[in-house]
Amino acid sequence: MSKRDDPIAVLLVQTAKHDAAAFRELYELTAPRQLAIAARLLGRRDLAEEAVQDAYVSIWDKAENFNPITGSAQGWITTITRRRAIDRLRASPWLKREIDIDWMDTIPASPDIHEDRLALQQCLDRLSNKVQSAIRLAYLYGLTHLELSKMLNLPLGTLKSQLRRGLAALKECLST
Image (cartoon, rainbow, N blue to C red; front, side, top):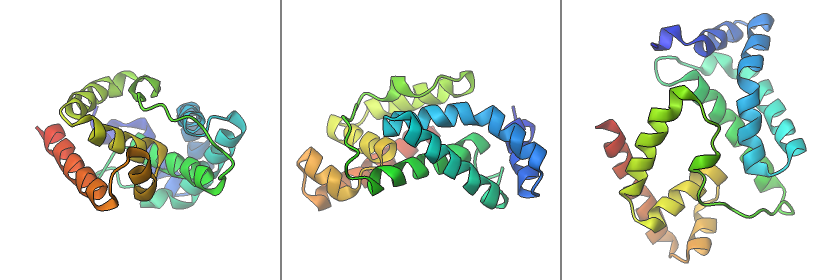
């Protein structure tokens, strides 16, 4: 399916024109997955629902910023939801949770992302365990460099260098 044929992208473009019906349909198509992502991050459904609500308010307000040429609509929506959930995690120091580093199996399954998930896992497998963990913790759980440094018992500069090299290696691996 080309990006032009992506129904979510089409709905986002219509939402940018403040088409309420398109926004409603966009929400119905995408919200269940976004709720699962937020619930996984936050560990509580009520907080996940609030994060998703905040995300969709932001999507309504900023839909004109979506560019179907530069990325997928689903990815754009997920990034916004993930950021709202991480904001809630960071704003609530009392919200402590166990971090499950083996997160690949927890992402909601979807036939259109199966190949991407497999490619990502194969590329991650090429990295050292510490770099894999750092990337997963940073991008799934939103941990800061300082938090990662303490958790992985690495000097801050070393951690940043390893993340930078690891992300460059992932980018190269995924582009081949």
